[in-house]
Image (cartoon, rainbow, N blue to C red; front, side):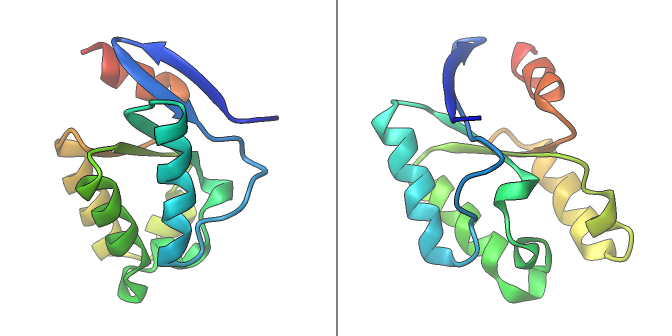
Amino acid sequence: MTDRVYEFGGVRILECAPDGAKLARPGDVSDFISAAWEHQATLVAIPLDRLADDFFRLRTGLAGEAIQKFVNYRIRLSVVGDLSTFTADSHALRDFINESNRGDHVWFVQDMAELHRRLAR
């Protein structure tokens, strides 16, 4: 599968393929932002397979640094997939996800259908 770019609800989405390079360190986020610019996307949907486990260990700071870069460049982010294995033992991560989902810039969703429902609102 390759990355896909399309419009939904007036939003240009870069839906990343699950089999590409991982976001494993803060510098890796530049690849995702560059791809968004290349395709004039305003939202990047990244599947769990493309995120290193450290992204979900808040103490590493990877999620915070990556998300801050997306915010700075005004590109919305959606993390797509079942997070239950990561949230089962982390109250802090559950709170982080819940708080993020209340806003409009970073969403954690189960699948692309959920992302589309959020955008349709």
